[in-house]
Image (cartoon, rainbow, N blue to C red):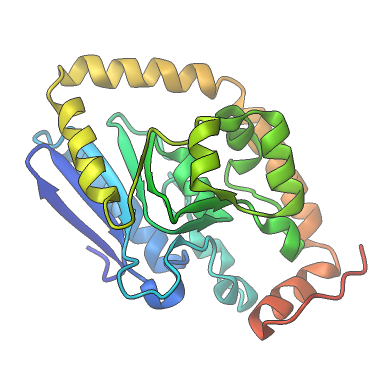
Length: 261
């Protein structure tokens, strides 16, 4: 298993942990490959029926579940490695799978980090968590499903505001809007996710897996065209003059000087 993605089991449950806390658990090539390998392991293990996806935030002053794409990797020409052929971004967001996965979030999930959460089946989060798509602040677009999954999860009005302003949604509001299944105190996300996973695992696994597939199909009925539109829009943005300025300003920790071209 990857040294930046940990995999462990607890009975019928697999726990997958993003483990780049020094980089705010941002997704680079190693994370994407590690997550894909972890999902392979989860799907292939007949003794594991449910997964939990979480992140190491223990040593962070301001906990970050995942800051999304590693912009330094993109700026250095390694952007292609952040996605896999089967899983898309982080080896996860478009991955076809059978078993349900609960995102256990204790901190900020922004940009691609939020899109990882949106690709999960259930979300447990702590009160110090927040969820946002900050791409517009970097002359990027949320190209890993966030532009269509967030409106489905919380409604168009709230999602449009979050997408166009780039401002995160606090956990309490995210819970009220229906993004979260459970809201718990800081440090308790994995414990609560384990309790929820155990309840799921106590049910007939085939019934769970087949029911999940129908629910996801109803949600994702037109994703193919939406993915195509998203990728086309991303291509236009990535070809703009502002792309280098947005990434450089982020790395240099300054406000960008946009030109709109």
